[in-house]
Amino acid sequence: LTILEQRFTLPEPIAQAVAGLRGRIAAGQAAVAAASRGWAWRTTVQAGGGHDSNANAGLALNDLTLTLPGGGVLLPVSPTLRPQTDRFAVASVSASGLRDQPQGQLELAGSVKARRNAQASDFDTLDLQAAVGWATTRPLPGGGLGGLLPGPWRAGLAAQHLKLGGSALLNSVVLSGTHVWAGASCNPQATVESDWRTFPVANNLNSRTLWVGASASCPGLYPARGGRWNALLRVGQETARSPFLSSTGRPGGNTRHTELTLTHAWNWQGSAGNHRLEAQAQWARAHDTQGYSPLLANDARRD
Image (cartoon, rainbow, N blue to C red):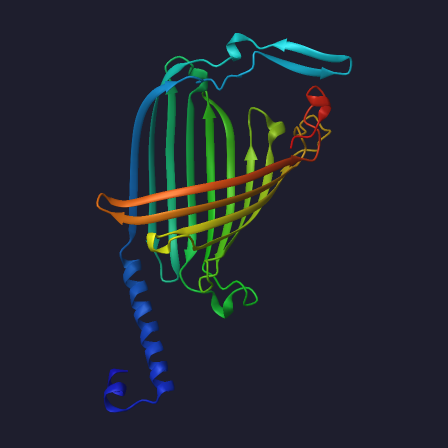
């Protein structure tokens, strides 16, 4: 290509083609060089302690009202279920790694977080999380699915195991996919996420949730100060794993979720370093398809 450019005066279309070819060669060389660098890891270790005025997640009410067919019944709450104060210590270790590939980027992450109370040991927690993801760095061949979803794409798989007081409380597996329209203004994104949750101590709460979301990020107020706003809309359907009328039916049946989040952030460089100011507003609604319990509000649906 260098000889061609030196010996001839190239017409504009050919010159553009040569420049494009040079760009593709350089991108390929950069991808190979990046892949040869191997993994890049980041590790974080945290520890701390404090005082919790409600270490056992106790009930704030002194009594509960049950709405029986014959009238309301007032039940006092046991003192053992009321909020208990306690000291606690927390510690966590997390690691994440990236490895560049010729066509994308491989991501791995994992974390361990534990909390131990001085007295309320039944409420000690252990949170284990692991995730793997793959993100493309180039558009898919042929423009992706029907030319409408060229990418970049990101696919991820995440798992969580949560223990409370030494017993398994939650097992969760999340499969997600994200598409970015890189060439469009405001960086629009679309996300699909499927979440399987299992509660070993209460299998009637087992469910699977399908989320569909869309987001955008555009210049906001005072762009000179890095002003930028972000909008996220998510719609989800949480489906019980067992029929509602069965012995393991989920209270409330299925649940429909709608979430709208608006965020505006400002970033600017000052004498003390980088500064960030953020304002956020969120509206969320969850609506059950069945009543929660005949003993609470005459089996009203939660909303």
